[in-house]
Image 1 (tube, rainbow, N blue to C red):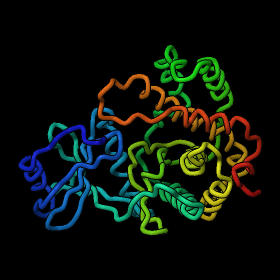
Image 2 (spheres, rainbow, N blue to C red):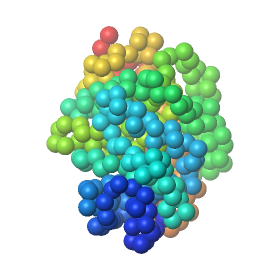
Image 3 (cartoon, rainbow, N blue to C red):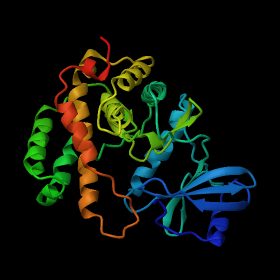
Image 4 (tube, rainbow, N blue to C red):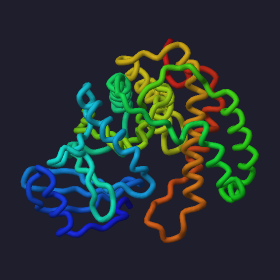
Length: 321
């Protein structure tokens, strides 16, 4: 569920007078996503997405997110665009929340992506990394390796409720990643959350990327590792080598990985799996009963973490060298 703040038709109509977006015809909440309240609007000028930024989003980060979408679109990436108000600002306020109007991107996300779709995702991710060059605003990755231990400490006392023995296993894994996390690899703007529900397709053609609210500056190859985790595992927990090969081929068709980035992929993939395990673990343990957020199983990413721990060569992900 992703409507945390209700809006009235009267309030929304008044909000729209600050935009050149036409007159409101209809609106409805969008029940996907976990961070913000989202609505699909239809006006006399077309369809738009209205996003109300909830308390988990720092208002100071919004110029980065909104400016980034403009920068990426101007440099060749298909993504939604924030609609400026009549006074030129990209941000307004509705129902006590910062709010933005975003252009509507045609397409839908795939529930069962195939290798050909993974290839398109890899190509789009590399296109984003190249398009992000020159974006002047920066944002630190608040969920990179330095944030994992504080997050872990919030859950450590209850982690064995999820699986017995996890306390020692995750403590050892965290220490190993902190000691060996790569430095000096190419960095830039990354999406940091490019899961299937953030990639739209029209048929088999990728129509664009959405939801840049985890975007930040970090290692580019770390973003690739996030996608390997998000796109290339099957429901039974097995890694699909064909999908991995397709994703990496698509990425390297636009931006070839350096030898150092390729060698770091197993460690970066472990780190990515741990990051999503820890955030899911926290939500799993701390979300109160009856909350409107659908909790995601942390054990899915524990299984992925255990797979990556056994990988010794990037060829095991399908990378040809």
